[in-house]
Image (cartoon, rainbow, N blue to C red; front, side):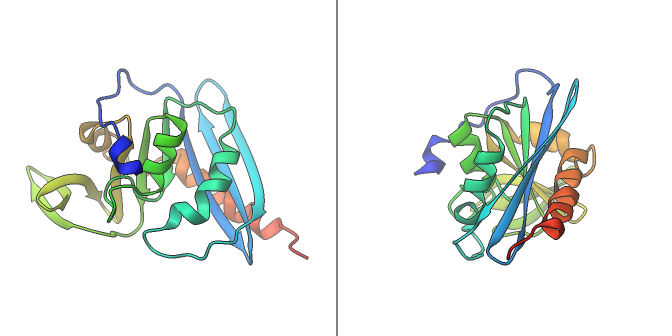
Amino acid sequence: MIAKQVNLVKLEREPREMCGVDVAYKGEMGVAVVVCDGETQIIKKVKGRVSFPYIPGLLFMREAPLMVKALEDVKPDLLLVDGHGIAHPRRSGIATVLGVLLETPTVGVAKSRLVGEIVEEGGVNYVTLNGERVGVKVGKYYYSPGNLVSLDDVIQLSRMGYPKVLREADRLSKVYRNEMDIS
């Protein structure tokens, strides 16, 4: 079980290279895009057939194969994933799955809440699950640790606004999807 392999620890240093990854679909075809910002900007895309349907809570079954392929040869200081980390019914959203499989610090940034309640404490809107803090809500986004990061790291990241690399991965995935020939 992936959730038992999660290691929530403070990042050793501020990330020098952050990457965002997202997937867009056209029919049964998907395109995963990785955008990295560091000393140089890296953009990678991978397309392929997707056979697993969209089921809330099982996004990793649909998107992880394409994301893993797109992330080959990419080892960022921090990977941001369009999806959940531990703020997930099984405490193993797509950010957690990728973080454990790739042994990479990951944070999930999702557009909707899957589980838990929002509890405000000290100006922070925590996502709590069974009384445990598993993420934060900032604006319309939900941030949660995936693997090899702490909740404090996630809070710091969330205060910087929606991550530029994730916004660009989302935008480019839609551009490449629209250009895809699925015939």
